[in-house]
Amino acid sequence: MNGPLAAALFTDDGEWKGAQGSYRGPKQIRESMEKIFAAAAAGIPKGSNFHLLTNVIIDLQGDRATASSKFIFYKMNGAKPEAAVAGGYEVRTTCRHE
Amino acid sequence: MKYARYMPALLAAVLLLPGCATPSASTAALEKRVQQLEDEKAIREVVIRYGEYLDARDYAGYASLFAKDGVWTGGFGSATGPAGIQAMLEKNLGKPEAGFINKQNFHLDTTVVVDVRGDTATARSRYMFFATSTDSRPAPTLAGRYVDQFVRENGQWKIKSRISHGVIPYRDGNDPNVPPPPAALKGIIKP
Image (tube, rainbow over all chains, first blue to last red; front, side, top):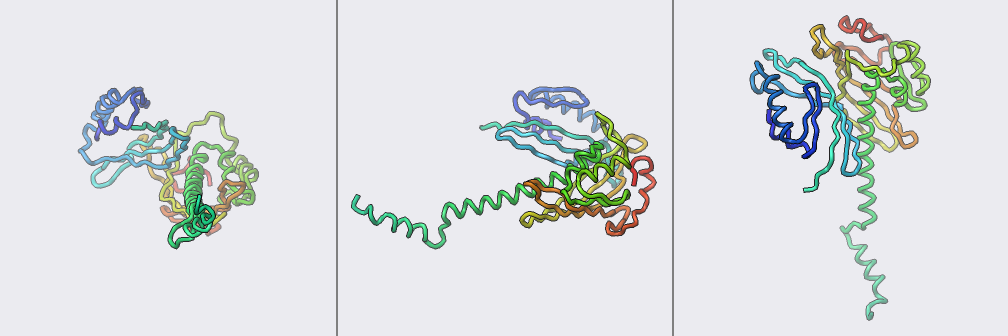
């Protein structure tokens, strides 16, 4: 879990919307993610869960793009990975020229 | 200019130097490589959309992925072309409901390997079919692989044929006798 790195993927006005609420900007997104994932990961030993991301379709239009994908969040049940949650992402992204 | 009359010959000599690709030749090579990548991307997307349209019960979208002479073969028999495939699915599965959101199951499509040969292509991929368990978790219920023959039709890649092989539980996709779906899928999918 690396909240700062994950949040750095967002633009300054970037938005994260999900079942747990709606957040804007890297700072707010980082703080909320850390809170949400700390609660969700309580009781799961560190390093024993992962996201599997697939079904990615990217539509690139110049400096903007949309992407849809599916995820499955796995956690370990003893020595066996067990699918805990499945969902879909809709991403709208823009290219920031540094 | 004193050497102006020699310029065409000098230019030709430069262009013919061994090992120097002419701009037009390298552009053509690049175009070919980009086309190859675009073809592969388009085919991967068809493989993903195939599962997504099924999950959404969008039979019109699903049928549109097939070529004019594309053949669907499965538990309902066989149908040819988008209109025929759509009609067959709606006859057996019912007309899709407007605004339907599938909260029960989905296809996960992965490990796609595409081999493009001009206007035809072969794609091999793997799928897992997840269904919700009694305690509301995603439970892998079927694992299999697809072998697809694609054809470029009016500039778009369409499915000419698809063979679905069961890996777990095992089923030979070339065997015309389709066994009943596993007990875990009772009421979720039809043959």
